Length: 231
Ligand code: C5P
Image 1 (cartoon, rainbow, N blue to C red):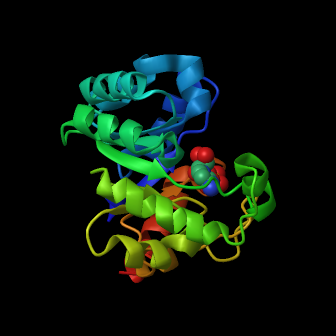
Image 2 (image 1 turned 120 degrees about the vertical axis):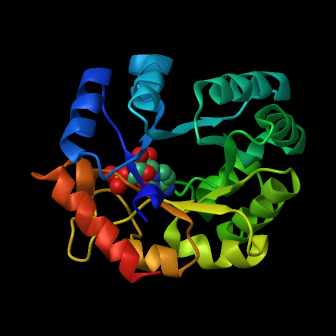
Image 3 (image 1 turned 180 degrees about the vertical axis):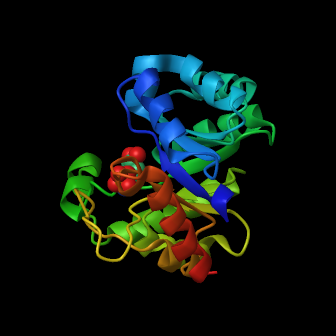
């Protein structure tokens, strides 16, 4: 179970990120590197994590012309990352180019609709009324799978519906995880680790409940114990 719990290293430097890794300890083997850390520390921090034997989820949410996204996917494959995110809204050709470049060695995850966008926000982007963001997310998830990607990133609240759309295969990676009674921070809809796995997640992403804890190793162990209760 430990390798299905991914800790988000939302840090501003490689030093800070690797200090966090030391504090979380050997039980955690899978880390997410997002836009802030990658912008600050680049591929060197990914290599440092790989050299320590960790799996890496590179959360860059790529969205560009197919040639660029394919190139970035190939470079991520060389770095040995396990997961890489791309925006489903980049379109079928972009998704297919990324899937071809991944050659099965990187698990490509599609981001459907950002949870920061509601019906009004998405309607403003598309220039037409959007009655149900969930339906758009479903449609995009189906496109992601048809293009040959490994799966999707979504909130645990959406996981049961997307699992039904995608069928039994495919990765569903869910952030917004808290222990019962934890602070929710800026997350709108949170789930416990156990609930997320029960609802069809294959991996969960946890940030501040672990990285902001006074004892990150103990916090990680509590999340894993909760996750094991949900299997
Ligand atoms: O600290 P927290 O557990 O809220 O962090 C969750 C991680 O998951 C962050 O790295 C954040 O970028 C990511 N995420 C999220 N909510 C989304 C999408 C991604 O929290 N809707």
